[in-house]
Image 1 (tube, rainbow, N blue to C red):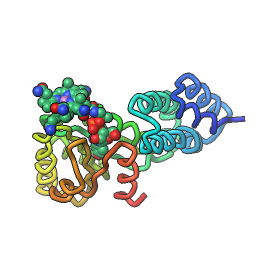
Image 2: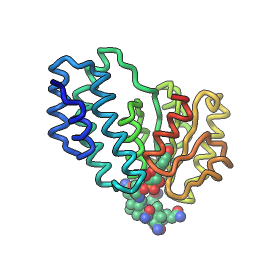
Image 3: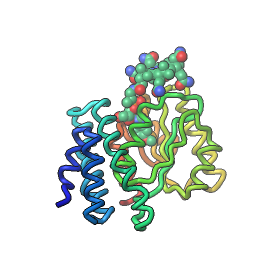
Length: 211
Ligand code: B1M
């Protein structure tokens, strides 16, 4: 019988080989892919997110768990695409112009993927035009911007202004984060939300999109 609880545990423990094996056997047993995703991979990453928030897990454990989650996702993605299971929503995430820090941004990407979002990773040093094009091309419902330098934080405001000019500001929710960011700064620049860490980013994304 498919062991979805074991699959979730393999994600929490970062056991990539086990995650692959249990995803594969669940698929072979004919378990619905949405169920494998929800009760196995996402359930596991939810626990990882909770532990990260409580400082029971640190960055390395999250990265190892995300690697196990990706191993399962690689098997499920083509099947999910065929079976018509829709991702929660499409999100564009990137580090802003002038900023090359991507470790935190990558954690946010992984946690969002783990929660079932379709994430378009725009990379680092992303300017307003590139964010705007990605949002339009992918019909994204949420934009996530990361900044680690006080000198690049204003680039978030520039992007928001450009989205406003292009008529995109009301079509997409904007979430910001990164070590120097605060809720006050997010409010000041007109972002819809701020998240202090990658696990909270998932909660905030769901809140902003009323999911
Ligand atoms: Co840089 N760097 N760095 N650096 N670097 C800092 C940020 C710094 C605080 C170090 C210091 O001086 N104490 C300082 C910034 C000072 C400031 O602006 N006030 C700094 C500086 C000055 C610089 C350079 C200018 C140095 C130089 O060249 N003179 C230069 C700038 C390059 C550039 O970007 N243009 C630079 C370069 C680099 C490296 C390339 C060497 C490397 C980056 C490698 C990489 O990312 N691939 C690097 C690193 C590693 C750091 C430190 C040491 C660590 C950053 C990190 O990855 N933290 C950092 C000092 C420090 O923080 N101790 C520092 C771990 C990561 C998991 O945390 O990114 O905060 P964080 O992400 C968290 C949350 O913030 C949140 O979730 C994540 C997980 O919980 N979060 C979001 C992040 N994005 C989010 C988005 C969201 C929501 C939450 O929604 C969308």
